[in-house]
Length: 276
Ligand SMILES: C[S@@+](CC[C@H](N)C(=O)[O-])C[C@H]1O[C@@H](n2cnc3c(N)ncnc32)[C@H](O)[C@@H]1O
Image (cartoon, rainbow, N blue to C red; front, top):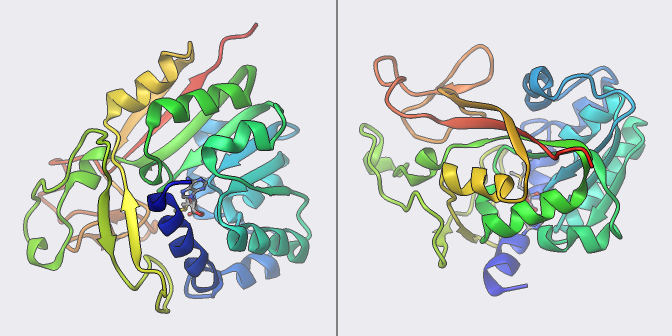
């Protein structure tokens, strides 16, 4: 693994304990309420459809609250992540919530080998996943390898236009393009001692992220023969991605009135691998 991703992994290791807490993703609440489905999965159900009995693989699953939400809806789930701490927490969450699941530690690009060539009906990812990956074409090859013929990938992800915006304090009142929209060889580097949810200070503060333009993401899939049958751009985000954003009653974050039609904040995409 390169130094960029090694730094990212140390940072993600640090985030696990903070995100577990009630003011983070609230793992104790998920354990206590066996009917709870995460907000993210609640929104994605419309386009993923009836999951009962399907084999679902969640890429970059963190500690698996979304993965386990799909299991609560009847899927047979596997989650992968490169953070050993995240996967240890995911296994604990599965056991303590009484939800059957399998979790595997692996770097994204090594997942087909780590899963020994196994294939899945649904590959699910997104909500801040692709920005940690240096090569979106290689990601497309991984997704293709992990899908059964006839299976589909679904992602709802931060829009590359959002990642190109300056979100620092001095840009709170304006939308300013400050970072590359397209994939670049070298990542954008950040140094932050807090995370997006929960309270607590990170020891490993340096991270590296890559943006991927919409056509780059689509081509990563279509060049492998996958067929896109759903694509949508959204005006709302799952987290506060710009200082001017406010949270709605639905838990989604939006730009101020009057600015909401200016830029897309997320996109969702479903692509199916042709039947053999
Ligand atoms: C924002 S989280 C994923 C979003 C997920 N929907 C969630 O919020 O629970 C990003 C995850 O990607 C994982 N990750 C980052 N880079 C990775 C890589 N190269 N291979 C595998 N996992 C990676 C991190 O450990 C982290 O758990």
